[in-house]
Image (tube, rainbow, N blue to C red):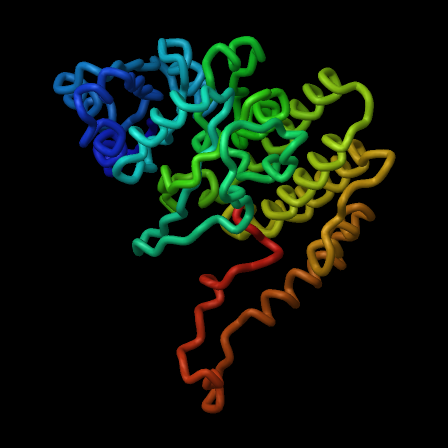
Length: 352
Protein backbone atom coordinates (compact mmCIF):
# COMPACT_ATOMS: atom_id res chain seq x y z
CA UNK A 1 0.00 0.00 0.00
CA UNK A 2 1.14 3.49 -0.84
CA UNK A 3 -0.94 6.66 -0.41
CA UNK A 4 -4.26 4.80 -0.27
CA UNK A 5 -5.51 5.72 3.20
CA UNK A 6 -8.96 6.57 1.81
CA UNK A 7 -9.38 3.06 0.41
CA UNK A 8 -7.42 0.85 2.79
CA UNK A 9 -10.18 -0.24 5.18
CA UNK A 10 -12.58 -0.93 2.32
CA UNK A 11 -10.01 -3.26 0.80
CA UNK A 12 -9.20 -5.08 4.05
CA UNK A 13 -12.85 -5.40 5.09
CA UNK A 14 -13.71 -6.86 1.69
CA UNK A 15 -11.16 -9.65 2.23
CA UNK A 16 -11.78 -10.50 5.89
CA UNK A 17 -15.26 -9.17 6.57
CA UNK A 18 -18.13 -11.63 6.61
CA UNK A 19 -15.97 -14.76 6.73
CA UNK A 20 -17.06 -17.62 8.95
CA UNK A 21 -14.59 -18.80 11.56
CA UNK A 22 -13.82 -21.85 9.40
CA UNK A 23 -13.13 -19.74 6.32
CA UNK A 24 -11.10 -17.18 8.28
CA UNK A 25 -8.91 -20.00 9.61
CA UNK A 26 -7.88 -20.72 6.01
CA UNK A 27 -7.02 -17.14 5.11
CA UNK A 28 -3.82 -15.25 5.87
CA UNK A 29 -3.56 -11.57 4.93
CA UNK A 30 -0.07 -10.12 4.56
CA UNK A 31 -0.29 -6.34 4.23
CA UNK A 32 2.78 -4.47 3.00
CA UNK A 33 3.29 -0.82 3.89
CA UNK A 34 5.60 0.43 1.13
CA UNK A 35 6.89 3.33 3.23
CA UNK A 36 3.65 5.20 2.57
CA UNK A 37 3.94 8.88 3.61
CA UNK A 38 0.25 9.16 4.56
CA UNK A 39 -1.60 7.42 7.44
CA UNK A 40 -1.56 3.97 5.82
CA UNK A 41 0.91 2.56 8.34
CA UNK A 42 -1.04 3.88 11.32
CA UNK A 43 -4.35 2.62 9.97
CA UNK A 44 -2.86 -0.73 9.09
CA UNK A 45 -1.47 -1.42 12.53
CA UNK A 46 -4.73 -0.36 14.17
CA UNK A 47 -6.59 -2.78 11.92
CA UNK A 48 -4.15 -5.62 12.58
CA UNK A 49 -4.69 -5.45 16.34
CA UNK A 50 -8.28 -6.60 15.76
CA UNK A 51 -7.50 -9.25 13.15
CA UNK A 52 -5.36 -12.22 14.19
CA UNK A 53 -5.33 -13.47 10.56
CA UNK A 54 -3.45 -10.34 9.54
CA UNK A 55 0.29 -9.90 9.31
CA UNK A 56 2.05 -6.67 8.43
CA UNK A 57 5.32 -5.92 6.68
CA UNK A 58 6.69 -2.38 6.91
CA UNK A 59 9.36 -1.46 4.40
CA UNK A 60 11.93 1.17 5.45
CA UNK A 61 12.03 2.72 1.97
CA UNK A 62 9.58 2.95 -0.89
CA UNK A 63 10.40 0.24 -3.44
CA UNK A 64 7.37 0.23 -5.73
CA UNK A 65 4.56 -2.22 -6.34
CA UNK A 66 6.55 -5.14 -7.74
CA UNK A 67 9.19 -5.31 -5.02
CA UNK A 68 6.57 -4.69 -2.32
CA UNK A 69 4.68 -7.72 -3.61
CA UNK A 70 7.90 -9.74 -3.37
CA UNK A 71 8.23 -8.70 0.28
CA UNK A 72 4.67 -9.82 0.98
CA UNK A 73 5.25 -13.09 -0.83
CA UNK A 74 8.35 -13.77 1.25
CA UNK A 75 6.37 -13.27 4.45
CA UNK A 76 3.41 -15.41 3.42
CA UNK A 77 2.92 -19.07 4.34
CA UNK A 78 -0.24 -20.05 2.45
CA UNK A 79 -0.51 -22.79 -0.17
CA UNK A 80 -1.99 -20.23 -2.58
CA UNK A 81 -1.29 -16.54 -3.02
CA UNK A 82 -3.52 -13.75 -4.29
CA UNK A 83 -2.08 -10.27 -4.88
CA UNK A 84 -4.85 -7.77 -4.06
CA UNK A 85 -4.02 -4.12 -4.70
CA UNK A 86 -4.85 -1.90 -1.75
CA UNK A 87 -7.03 0.58 -3.67
CA UNK A 88 -9.27 -2.19 -5.03
CA UNK A 89 -11.73 -4.45 -3.24
CA UNK A 90 -13.51 -7.81 -3.43
CA UNK A 91 -17.29 -8.31 -3.77
CA UNK A 92 -18.99 -10.18 -0.89
CA UNK A 93 -18.53 -13.93 -1.02
CA UNK A 94 -15.43 -13.81 -3.23
CA UNK A 95 -13.01 -15.40 -0.77
CA UNK A 96 -15.25 -18.40 0.09
CA UNK A 97 -15.93 -18.95 -3.63
CA UNK A 98 -12.20 -18.92 -4.38
CA UNK A 99 -11.43 -21.29 -1.49
CA UNK A 100 -14.08 -23.73 -2.69
CA UNK A 101 -12.75 -23.77 -6.25
CA UNK A 102 -9.16 -24.22 -5.05
CA UNK A 103 -10.17 -27.23 -2.97
CA UNK A 104 -12.17 -28.74 -5.83
CA UNK A 105 -9.70 -28.37 -8.70
CA UNK A 106 -6.30 -27.69 -7.05
CA UNK A 107 -5.12 -25.61 -10.03
CA UNK A 108 -1.71 -24.07 -10.56
CA UNK A 109 -3.48 -20.84 -11.53
CA UNK A 110 -7.09 -19.83 -10.90
CA UNK A 111 -8.30 -16.99 -13.14
CA UNK A 112 -10.96 -14.63 -11.76
CA UNK A 113 -13.39 -12.26 -13.40
CA UNK A 114 -13.54 -8.57 -12.46
CA UNK A 115 -15.35 -5.29 -13.01
CA UNK A 116 -13.84 -1.89 -13.65
CA UNK A 117 -15.29 0.79 -11.35
CA UNK A 118 -15.18 4.51 -12.17
CA UNK A 119 -15.07 7.32 -9.62
CA UNK A 120 -18.80 7.97 -10.12
CA UNK A 121 -19.59 4.35 -9.25
CA UNK A 122 -20.25 3.32 -12.85
CA UNK A 123 -19.18 -0.27 -13.47
CA UNK A 124 -18.12 -1.89 -16.73
CA UNK A 125 -16.75 -5.18 -17.92
CA UNK A 126 -13.26 -5.34 -19.36
CA UNK A 127 -13.63 -5.90 -23.09
CA UNK A 128 -9.86 -6.09 -23.55
CA UNK A 129 -9.42 -9.54 -22.01
CA UNK A 130 -12.67 -11.36 -21.17
CA UNK A 131 -12.68 -14.73 -19.44
CA UNK A 132 -14.13 -17.71 -21.31
CA UNK A 133 -17.44 -18.89 -19.89
CA UNK A 134 -18.42 -22.36 -18.78
CA UNK A 135 -14.90 -23.76 -18.46
CA UNK A 136 -15.07 -26.65 -15.99
CA UNK A 137 -12.11 -28.34 -14.33
CA UNK A 138 -8.55 -27.51 -15.38
CA UNK A 139 -6.91 -27.01 -18.77
CA UNK A 140 -3.52 -26.12 -20.18
CA UNK A 141 -2.86 -23.06 -22.31
CA UNK A 142 -2.33 -25.25 -25.37
CA UNK A 143 -5.93 -26.43 -25.01
CA UNK A 144 -7.36 -22.93 -24.56
CA UNK A 145 -4.86 -20.47 -26.11
CA UNK A 146 -7.33 -17.61 -25.75
CA UNK A 147 -6.50 -17.57 -22.03
CA UNK A 148 -3.25 -15.80 -22.90
CA UNK A 149 -5.37 -12.76 -23.79
CA UNK A 150 -6.94 -12.47 -20.36
CA UNK A 151 -5.93 -9.23 -18.64
CA UNK A 152 -2.21 -9.57 -17.85
CA UNK A 153 -2.41 -8.50 -14.22
CA UNK A 154 -1.42 -10.27 -11.02
CA UNK A 155 -4.64 -9.47 -9.14
CA UNK A 156 -6.93 -11.60 -11.34
CA UNK A 157 -4.93 -14.77 -10.62
CA UNK A 158 -4.72 -16.98 -7.53
CA UNK A 159 -1.47 -18.95 -7.76
CA UNK A 160 -0.31 -22.19 -6.17
CA UNK A 161 2.73 -21.25 -4.12
CA UNK A 162 4.78 -24.39 -4.83
CA UNK A 163 4.23 -23.90 -8.57
CA UNK A 164 5.31 -20.27 -8.32
CA UNK A 165 8.43 -21.18 -6.33
CA UNK A 166 9.40 -23.94 -8.78
CA UNK A 167 9.00 -21.51 -11.66
CA UNK A 168 11.25 -19.03 -9.85
CA UNK A 169 9.09 -16.05 -10.73
CA UNK A 170 9.27 -12.78 -8.84
CA UNK A 171 8.28 -9.25 -9.72
CA UNK A 172 10.80 -6.89 -11.27
CA UNK A 173 11.11 -3.22 -10.29
CA UNK A 174 9.49 -0.53 -12.38
CA UNK A 175 6.04 0.11 -13.80
CA UNK A 176 4.17 -2.58 -15.77
CA UNK A 177 5.67 -5.20 -13.47
CA UNK A 178 2.83 -7.63 -14.29
CA UNK A 179 4.04 -8.22 -17.87
CA UNK A 180 6.98 -10.61 -17.22
CA UNK A 181 5.10 -12.22 -14.32
CA UNK A 182 1.59 -13.00 -15.56
CA UNK A 183 2.32 -14.42 -19.01
CA UNK A 184 4.89 -17.03 -17.86
CA UNK A 185 2.42 -18.22 -15.22
CA UNK A 186 -0.14 -19.18 -17.83
CA UNK A 187 2.43 -20.60 -20.25
CA UNK A 188 4.05 -22.86 -17.64
CA UNK A 189 0.91 -23.94 -15.76
CA UNK A 190 -0.28 -27.50 -16.24
CA UNK A 191 -3.59 -26.84 -14.49
CA UNK A 192 -5.47 -23.59 -15.20
CA UNK A 193 -8.97 -23.11 -13.82
CA UNK A 194 -11.45 -20.29 -14.43
CA UNK A 195 -13.92 -19.04 -11.82
CA UNK A 196 -16.88 -17.60 -13.69
CA UNK A 197 -17.72 -15.05 -11.03
CA UNK A 198 -16.94 -11.38 -10.39
CA UNK A 199 -14.36 -11.63 -7.60
CA UNK A 200 -12.55 -8.32 -7.96
CA UNK A 201 -13.43 -4.66 -8.38
CA UNK A 202 -10.70 -2.65 -10.05
CA UNK A 203 -10.75 1.06 -9.28
CA UNK A 204 -10.24 3.31 -12.32
CA UNK A 205 -8.82 6.81 -12.45
CA UNK A 206 -7.58 7.14 -8.88
CA UNK A 207 -5.17 10.10 -8.59
CA UNK A 208 -1.68 8.64 -8.34
CA UNK A 209 -2.56 5.40 -10.12
CA UNK A 210 -0.11 4.40 -12.83
CA UNK A 211 -2.74 4.32 -15.58
CA UNK A 212 -3.84 7.85 -14.66
CA UNK A 213 -0.37 9.41 -14.31
CA UNK A 214 1.32 11.03 -17.32
CA UNK A 215 5.00 10.21 -16.92
CA UNK A 216 8.13 9.08 -18.71
CA UNK A 217 8.01 6.03 -16.45
CA UNK A 218 5.61 4.46 -18.93
CA UNK A 219 8.80 3.72 -20.88
CA UNK A 220 9.35 1.00 -18.25
CA UNK A 221 7.04 -1.15 -20.37
CA UNK A 222 9.90 -1.75 -22.82
CA UNK A 223 12.17 -3.20 -20.13
CA UNK A 224 9.37 -5.42 -18.88
CA UNK A 225 8.73 -6.81 -22.36
CA UNK A 226 12.47 -7.38 -22.78
CA UNK A 227 12.34 -9.51 -19.62
CA UNK A 228 9.30 -11.41 -20.87
CA UNK A 229 10.90 -12.29 -24.21
CA UNK A 230 14.19 -13.18 -22.53
CA UNK A 231 12.26 -15.72 -20.43
CA UNK A 232 10.36 -16.95 -23.47
CA UNK A 233 13.48 -17.45 -25.63
CA UNK A 234 15.11 -19.35 -22.77
CA UNK A 235 12.13 -21.58 -22.06
CA UNK A 236 11.15 -22.02 -25.73
CA UNK A 237 14.23 -21.44 -27.92
CA UNK A 238 12.41 -22.65 -31.02
CA UNK A 239 9.85 -20.34 -32.56
CA UNK A 240 6.32 -21.31 -31.55
CA UNK A 241 2.85 -19.87 -31.69
CA UNK A 242 3.59 -18.36 -28.28
CA UNK A 243 6.14 -16.03 -29.83
CA UNK A 244 3.62 -14.77 -32.37
CA UNK A 245 0.79 -14.41 -29.86
CA UNK A 246 2.91 -12.58 -27.28
CA UNK A 247 4.32 -10.32 -29.98
CA UNK A 248 0.83 -9.28 -31.06
CA UNK A 249 -0.17 -8.66 -27.45
CA UNK A 250 2.95 -6.56 -26.88
CA UNK A 251 2.38 -4.40 -29.98
CA UNK A 252 -1.30 -3.88 -29.13
CA UNK A 253 -0.40 -2.93 -25.56
CA UNK A 254 2.30 -0.46 -26.59
CA UNK A 255 -0.19 1.17 -28.96
CA UNK A 256 -2.62 1.52 -26.04
CA UNK A 257 0.03 3.32 -24.01
CA UNK A 258 1.22 5.63 -26.79
CA UNK A 259 -2.34 6.66 -27.64
CA UNK A 260 -3.50 7.43 -24.11
CA UNK A 261 -3.35 11.07 -22.99
CA UNK A 262 -3.59 10.01 -19.34
CA UNK A 263 -0.32 8.11 -19.61
CA UNK A 264 1.99 9.95 -21.99
CA UNK A 265 2.51 13.72 -22.13
CA UNK A 266 2.31 14.99 -25.71
CA UNK A 267 6.07 15.62 -25.94
CA UNK A 268 6.82 11.97 -25.13
CA UNK A 269 4.45 10.43 -27.66
CA UNK A 270 6.83 10.53 -30.64
CA UNK A 271 9.84 9.11 -28.68
CA UNK A 272 7.66 6.36 -27.26
CA UNK A 273 6.32 5.50 -30.72
CA UNK A 274 9.84 5.31 -32.14
CA UNK A 275 11.01 3.07 -29.34
CA UNK A 276 7.95 0.88 -29.80
CA UNK A 277 8.79 0.62 -33.50
CA UNK A 278 12.32 -0.52 -32.63
CA UNK A 279 10.78 -3.08 -30.25
CA UNK A 280 8.59 -4.25 -33.13
CA UNK A 281 11.62 -4.84 -35.35
CA UNK A 282 13.54 -6.57 -32.58
CA UNK A 283 10.92 -9.17 -31.67
CA UNK A 284 8.92 -9.61 -34.89
CA UNK A 285 8.49 -13.38 -35.45
CA UNK A 286 10.06 -14.71 -38.63
CA UNK A 287 6.85 -16.52 -39.51
CA UNK A 288 4.61 -13.51 -38.99
CA UNK A 289 1.90 -13.02 -36.39
CA UNK A 290 -1.92 -12.63 -36.17
CA UNK A 291 -2.17 -8.94 -37.01
CA UNK A 292 -5.56 -7.39 -36.15
CA UNK A 293 -7.87 -6.18 -38.87
CA UNK A 294 -9.27 -2.75 -39.50
CA UNK A 295 -7.94 0.40 -37.88
CA UNK A 296 -6.04 -1.54 -35.21
CA UNK A 297 -4.22 -3.49 -37.89
CA UNK A 298 -3.41 -0.25 -39.70
CA UNK A 299 -1.77 1.09 -36.57
CA UNK A 300 0.30 -2.10 -36.35
CA UNK A 301 1.52 -1.46 -39.89
CA UNK A 302 2.35 2.16 -39.11
CA UNK A 303 4.35 1.06 -36.10
CA UNK A 304 6.17 -1.55 -38.20
CA UNK A 305 7.34 1.18 -40.59
CA UNK A 306 7.97 3.80 -37.87
CA UNK A 307 5.45 6.10 -39.58
CA UNK A 308 4.75 8.44 -36.69
CA UNK A 309 3.33 11.33 -38.75
CA UNK A 310 0.75 9.08 -40.37
CA UNK A 311 -0.05 7.54 -36.98
CA UNK A 312 -0.52 11.01 -35.45
CA UNK A 313 -2.80 12.05 -38.31
CA UNK A 314 -4.89 8.89 -37.93
CA UNK A 315 -5.12 9.39 -34.17
CA UNK A 316 -6.23 13.02 -34.60
CA UNK A 317 -8.82 12.13 -37.23
CA UNK A 318 -10.26 9.41 -35.06
CA UNK A 319 -10.56 11.69 -32.04
CA UNK A 320 -12.21 14.42 -34.08
CA UNK A 321 -14.73 11.89 -35.35
CA UNK A 322 -15.58 10.93 -31.75
CA UNK A 323 -16.38 14.48 -30.64
CA UNK A 324 -20.07 15.11 -29.90
CA UNK A 325 -21.88 17.27 -32.48
CA UNK A 326 -22.28 20.96 -31.72
CA UNK A 327 -24.51 23.74 -32.91
CA UNK A 328 -28.30 24.24 -33.00
CA UNK A 329 -28.92 21.22 -35.23
CA UNK A 330 -26.74 18.83 -33.25
CA UNK A 331 -29.48 16.63 -31.78
CA UNK A 332 -28.88 12.88 -31.91
CA UNK A 333 -31.43 11.09 -34.03
CA UNK A 334 -32.28 8.83 -31.09
CA UNK A 335 -33.48 11.76 -29.03
CA UNK A 336 -31.00 10.80 -26.31
CA UNK A 337 -28.15 13.05 -25.16
CA UNK A 338 -24.83 12.42 -26.83
CA UNK A 339 -22.36 10.38 -24.79
CA UNK A 340 -19.32 12.51 -23.89
CA UNK A 341 -16.31 11.58 -26.00
CA UNK A 342 -14.21 10.69 -22.99
CA UNK A 343 -16.79 8.07 -21.96
CA UNK A 344 -17.05 6.32 -25.31
CA UNK A 345 -15.10 3.14 -25.95
CA UNK A 346 -12.06 3.80 -28.10
CA UNK A 347 -10.91 0.90 -30.28
CA UNK A 348 -7.51 2.56 -30.64
CA UNK A 349 -6.87 2.80 -26.89
CA UNK A 350 -8.27 -0.31 -25.29
CA UNK A 351 -8.27 -0.81 -21.57
CA UNK A 352 -5.04 -2.66 -20.85
